[in-house]
Image 1 (cartoon, helix red, strand yellow):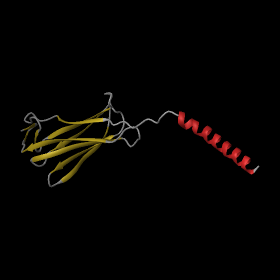
Image 2: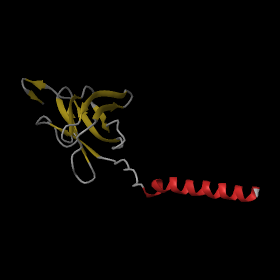
Image 3: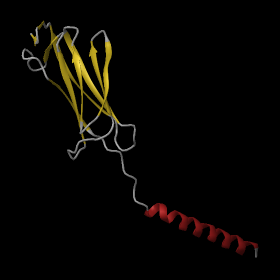
Image 4: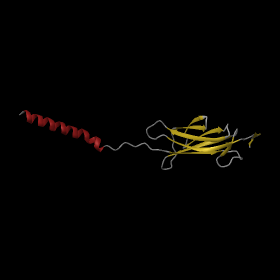
Length: 150
């Protein structure tokens, strides 16, 4: 008699577990976080700048573009910009909100030589993964003459 009660209880428990698990099995999968695409470009160069070379003492603009894999601009989050000079470490250049997929800062190279520029995107939400990119530029001695940078 005791064995029958135990079997019924066990069967009822298994049935209840199956019914409770059914919504979990049929629920849609949670959205996975998306890795945006970030690019970094040096723009607004003085007329004497060429390629990946910039003059010291002259401001240039660093433009980060953040898009989704389908090409749509990211509308949330921030981009942090850094400059790495060999022997000097990373120098924080600014934290800028992303607007219509763009974030920009002005940077002035203070030391001639190699400069590693980087941009790191994050939004603090589970929808987008943090991503970063970088580029290398060579700073050469520059000279401000009036409104021109040589």
